[in-house]
Amino acid sequence: MSDDTSIRFPFGRLAGLVLVAMGLLTASDTAAGEHFTRGSEKAWKFGAQESPLRGLLRQHCSNPRAWMTDDGQWFVNLSDTGYRLFRAKDAPLWREFVRDAAGKGITCMRAASLGGWGGTSGARVDDNKTWVWNDPWAGGAKPDYARFDLAKFQNTDERLIWILDHYPEMYLQFI
Image (cartoon, rainbow, N blue to C red; front, top):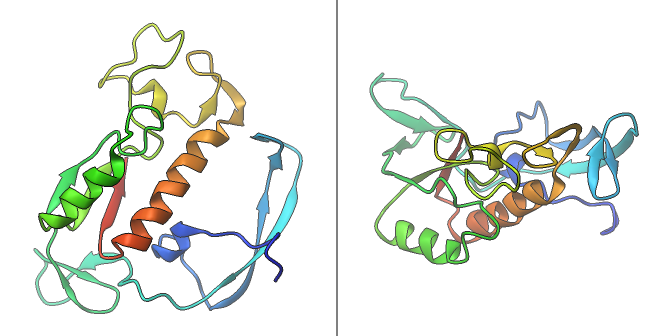
């Protein structure tokens, strides 16, 4: 596969993408310029390979009050909250935040997948109760339900890749 068609897909590395077998996969994407739009189908092919990551969290096979990973290892969930970890403009120290959490033994970070709340232009209310910013749609307070806001997804993707490259033992819980 050439570099111009290969895709880094961290969700697959996280084992969030369930694969039946390793090898070449085909997915359908609706990419059109800066945003995803309905109706312009484009097929993507990408490879999947074994991962050194521990896999999904599951209920422990011998203790229903404990966690284990796909590789059979016990997992202790020491969690921290970084709701705005994937917020582009309001989280300039996000790397330092993750380093500090990992240094303190945190094994799981709970975060808003597309940035959390606050700062959506034109929103009547955008606070920790409404979370307008975390919506996937382009258009802010007047969402365009036909288009995803690709910048939010790209920001989450870039930060997720960095976290997995530097702290592969860190699990993320997206809300």
